[in-house]
Image (cartoon, rainbow, N blue to C red):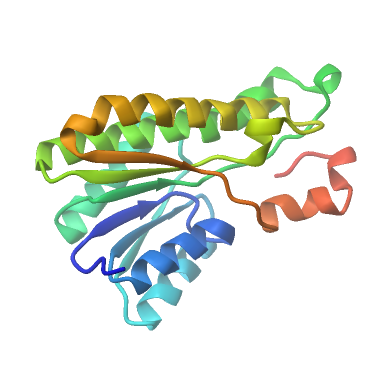
Length: 206
């Protein structure tokens, strides 16, 4: 795969799967905007790419709000001249069983996963349609969105919604030659590690 001359944004790109996506895109030749809420993680992701000869720049901000999505796209355009792909990977967990889940637990997860995917994809689609050369939206879902998962009402709902948005946007953006795919990966990352250790029974993630 040759992505020389292409420019991508990866949200949540400082660690875990997001960093793996960012590094793979860079290895194929793409310039990458590495977004993360953790400045150190974003910096490490950028350093890993540039030390290997690639091009990358960090943007430290939590996804969800439209202004953050606009900033990610504008950074790609200002630094590298265009935008060809948006990978919406950023996420958080606030696991609770239904009768213990607060409004805040629900909203925090939906805001990052579902709204963050929506705002970032919308900003990317606007730019790609203006460029007139097509593009790619790659939305990261989860098996929890397909099957459900104990203690994850918020996460499962958001991840199922991402798949539904992908199907809808694929129809809407086909004429502009912007492809839309939802990816459902299975992997052990820092975000899921605490669940494996049983910590989700005691506390939410920070």
